Length: 191
Image 1: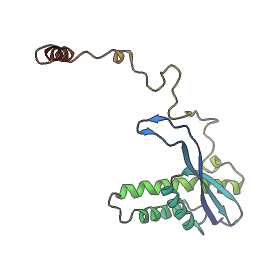
Image 2: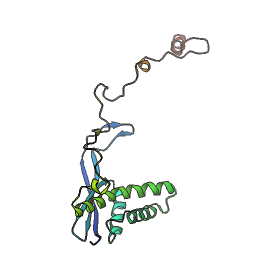
Image 3: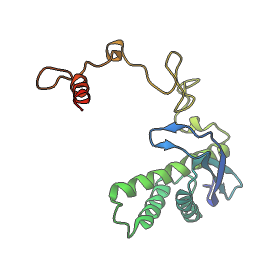
Image 4: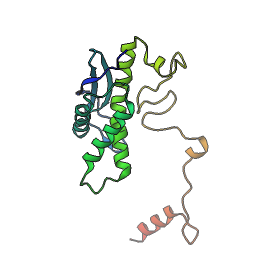
């Protein structure tokens, strides 16, 4: 049995509506940007994955996709070497990137293509991907719906704190034993 070879790979950018919600760093854009990774083998089998969709990441995905041409679909270590080369070349001359930045960029690139390679292998063997990874462990996996979703019983926009910490804090005392609130009100009266 021959080893399938990658003859084509590409990242297809997608943008879909995502209502802007307030989060810790402000309001995000009204569009979610993602990409679908498509890997094609010499046997006509296609494997799919998904990844981030920002322009800077898409450029790295495109570079990785070009370099994958001719790589055996089973060669995950080859994918890792290609991703590391792309990551290193993308940060050349940028002083703010260190070895950790290269490693993180390479990890994002590997994760973008690895599932597509596993998917192509599984489709070729007519197996579910979990069979290639050692078999199914459970029938279902509980999953949260959305990062900003609030579980039942929690107020929207906040988290629930233990009852002891919900009490209003005691006013702080100044050096004369009075509360800061009383110091402020004394100052206003004096003006």
